[in-house]
Structures are given as C-alpha cells and as structure tokens.
Amino acid sequence: MAEIMREIPQDDLKALEKESTTSIQGYSAALVEPNPALDRKILWRRDLVLVPTMGILYMILFLDRTNIANARSLGIGQPNGLEMSLNMPTNGYNTALWIFYIPFVLAEIPANLLLSRRFIRPGILLGGQMFILGIISMCQGLTGSFGGLLACRFLMGIFEVALPAGATFMMSTYYTKREAAVRFAWFFNFALAGPFFSGLLAYAIAGLEGAGGLYGWRWIFIIEGIMTSLLAVGVILACPNFPEDAQEWFLKPHERERLVYQLEQSRGAETRGSAIDSVPLWKILIDWRIHLFTMCFFCCDITAASISAFSPTILTELGWTSTVAQLMSMPVWASGIVSAFLFTWLASFLNKRTPFVLFCIALQLGGWIIMRVYVSSVGVRYFALFLMSMGTFPQMPTLMGWLSANLRGHKYLAVGMAWMIGFGNCANFVSSNIFITTERPRYPTGFSVGLGFTVLGFVLTCLACFLCMYKNKQFDKRRENMTDAERETDDEIHFKLVY
Image (cartoon, rainbow, N blue to C red; front, side, top):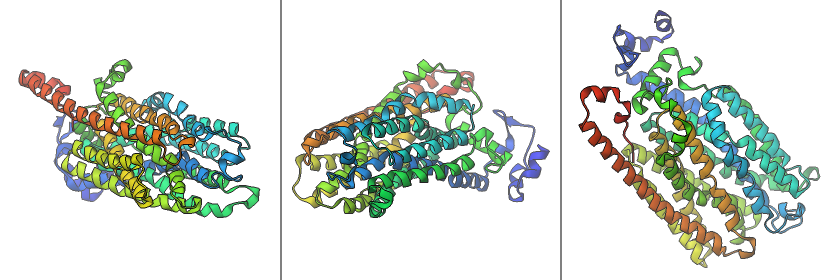
C-alpha cells in the first residue's frame, strides 16, 4: 500500500486517508468511499484513449468494407469502371459483397474467445490484423481479374474477423452499464465516419483517373489500404490491456483498482475470474438474450448493409453523375452520425432503450415505404435515404449496449458481442443479393425485403422488452422467498436486466 500511496497524485490523497484494514468484497474501504473527482478523471482517461483507439479501428474497417460501393460508382457501366474492366458477370458485384462475410461470420466467436483468454496483448492482436487487412485491401486495387478481387475480399474477411467484435468486447469490459450506451454511440459514430469520408475521398480520388496508368476505382482501394496499415501502427501502440491489467501509462494502480471495483458493482463480480466465467460454452450459446438481441441487430443491419453497399448506386440512378453522387452520400451518413449520438445519449440519460429503438424503427419504415412505392420525386426518394440512415444507425450502438448491459462475465461478453457482430452481419448475405441489377432502378425485391425485416425488427424489440420485464419480476419473486444469508451468497439474484 505504501508503494501505491507514493504514486498517487496529491489531489487524490484525500480519498485514501480513510484507508483502514476493513475491506468490502476484497476491496479496501477507500475504494468504496465516494470520490467524484477521481471517478471523473478515470472516465476522461478511458474516453480519451479507449474510445478514439477502438473508434478509429472500427472506422477504418467500415471504410475498407464499404469502399467497394464507391469504387463501383466510379465509371459504372463504363469500360473504365470496376465491373467492366474486370469482366465481372451480372451478379459479380453481389458476389464480391457476400464472399467477404463467409470467414467473417464463422470465426467471430473463436477470435473473441482468443482475445478474452489473453494469450496475445489486445493491441498486438487487433493492430496486427488491421495492418495485414490494409495490405490486402490495397491489393484489391492491383488485381487484374474478377477472381483476384474475390480472393482479396475473402482474405479481408479472414483478417477482419476479430476486429469489430474485439473492439466492442474491449469497450464492454471498460464501461459500466450506464456509461456504455453513450460510449458505444461515439464508438459507432467513428464507424459511420468511414463511409462518410469515403465519399469525399472517392470524389477527390476520381481526379486520379489514369494516373500511373491506373483507373480511378483502383486508386480508391490503394490509397485507403495504405491509410489502414499506417493507422494500425497507432492502434498497436495506443490500445490498452484489459482493466485489471491496464498499463500504468493508462491507469495508475489506485485508478485501476477503483475502476475494477466500479465495474464489479455494475455487472457483478466478473472481472476477477468469478464463477460466471466457468459456465460451459454450450450454455452461453443457448442463452435467449444473445439470440434475441442478435436477431434485432440482424433486422437493423439489413438496412445498414443496404445503405452501405447500394446508396452510391441508387444516388447515381437518381440522376447525379458518379462523382457528384459521392458527395451526395455524405449528408446521408452525417444524419446517421448525429441521430446516433442524440438518441443513444437520450436513452442513456433516461436509462430507457425500448422507446428509442421503436421510434428509430418507425423512421426506418418511412424510408423503406417511400422506396417501395417508388415515389416519382427525386427529392422525396433522397429524403427516404435520410430516414433510413437516421432510423438505422442509432439502433446499432443501442442494441450493442443493451446486450452488453444484460450479460455478466468476460466469457459471456466475449461470446455475446461476437455472436451479435458476427451473425448479425449475416444481414449482408441478404442485402448483397436482394438488389438485383436487372430490377433497377425500382428494385422491388430489395425494397420489399428491407421493409419486411424492419417490421420484424419492431416485433422482436417489443418481445425483448417484454421478456426483460418478465425475467426481472421472476427475480423479484425469487428474492422475496430467500433468506438474508441466501441473498448475500447468491450474486445472480442482484443482477437486473435493463430495457
């Protein structure tokens, strides 16, 4: 203790003056004492290091995953375009989209379990994969055939597999239930900034058409791939370890101990290898919470994947040139960024999730309905993209935070977040095959399927809310029938589901 006291800054010493031999659940009494100044300092440190590091990682991944839509819109239907220059078949673009998600979906859970077992430092595992991903992404711009493009997309899925779920898992381990919602919003807004800036980059890179003997769409992949590898070095250096093992440059010993205590108070004794982490994997995989919230995420991601992969094409078909369409996609993404932070902040402030998710689904429905009936006005159809963006992107961080808040233990979090990201992203298999080239510009199949899944998402969200309320009532009844001694030893009984 004397060694720790010497490392504590003077303005924090007051909080530890009441140190005694008394301990609460293995913690010193000083950690239990209220200390708002120290708590704010720890929160700011997490916000200034963890959120930008994980956010930039997610932003680059999202950019590398969706830049194929921008590349396609440059010279669409022209000999210098992506499809014609690689002699792609009619459904070639759709195939290039879904082939990425085969390894991405299958290996999410094993990759997250590897991260949670801590065989490799998080910064090395996440940043190293990101570096390789950038190289492969760059190779998309150098390939000379459709088969080469498919091979690059498949390899990208392999090396991206641990990154989105790993980033969300790291976020889940560092924030309490109440803190997580807004941080997931900031984190997810970094992801939305990827395609936002991708439109601007694509507009600027269009001027490189013919430079070095390469088409403009090739330069999109090359430049953004180089950016990915360079930023990966920053992730390797800046990514901290898990809370209980956080480096001293990030959290001092007394700050680390206080944070671990707060996390345990929020989620239960999960950070020190508690019994909850001894639950067999099969039991986690049949947990209704994981599957129900993943299905809600899946329904939402149908819209997100459709906007990511096809909005530049749709904007081109509304009458804008391919370069102008790149710029016109930016306000659509910007509206999603603003609404994501606004709605998740309100949900966190009021500690309510269901009403905001349902309202956002209603916005989604409005956008899909306008697209499905094919309103003749270009301005109205453009507005529909805003409704879809504003309704979709707040749901995703809210659902991530909702599931995270309802899980306990590193193992549950690792599997649950990986399952949501991995199998929720199966929506890309659907969205990449419902916008059929021969049906443009009305795309009746694509718009009908999107509308149907949005309605299903509304129903599933209501069901999730009902089950959370029902389970809490069961816990309350069980608690009433327990003795004081049983309540003290049964940690599970104190865990309440949020809705």
